[in-house]
Amino acid sequence: MAHTINSFSLKEDQLDNPLEKILLPPTDPNAEVQEIPGYKLVYVNGACPRNYRVYTDDSMIGVIFQHITHWCNGVDSLRYAEPVDAAVGLDQFMKVARVSTTATGEPPTEEELFDKEFDALMSDEWERLKRYVPKTRDLVAA
Image 1 (spheres, rainbow, N blue to C red):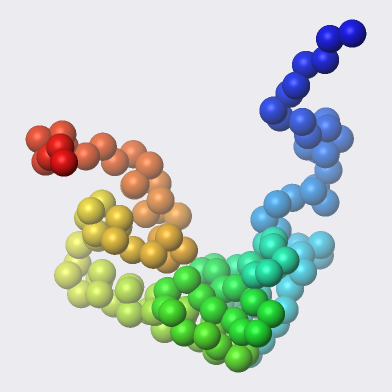
Image 2: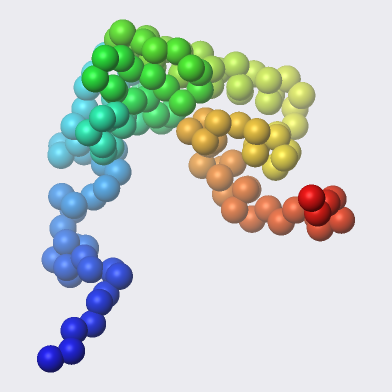
C-alpha cells in the first residue's frame, strides 16, 4: 500500500476550530495573558525562552522573552529581572524610533529597514520589505 506524505497535515476540524488559533489577541478568552502595570503580555510559544507579545491598550508594540534567569526584548542587549522592565525598555525604544521617523517627516527607506532589529519591524514595514526589489546596478559581486 503506497502512502503519500502531505506537507500540510492539519486536520480539517483543526482549521475550523477557533481554539487552535496561533496568535490569539489579548481579548480572546483562550489567550494566556499576564497583566503588568501599563502592559498586557500575551504568550505566543516557546519553552525557554517563552515568547510574549507586548500590548499597550490594544496596540502591539513588540515581543519580549522569558528565560529561566531573566527577561529580555529584541531591541537591546540588556537582561531584566522583571517582565515590566523588559516591556518598558521595549516601549521606550519604540517611542524613540517613532520620534526619529516623524522628526524627518519621511518613513525610513527600505535600506534603513534592513538595519532594524527583526522584532522591531512593524507590520507595514514588513509589507514594504516583502515588495522591495533592490536595484541591480547597486549590487557588486565579491
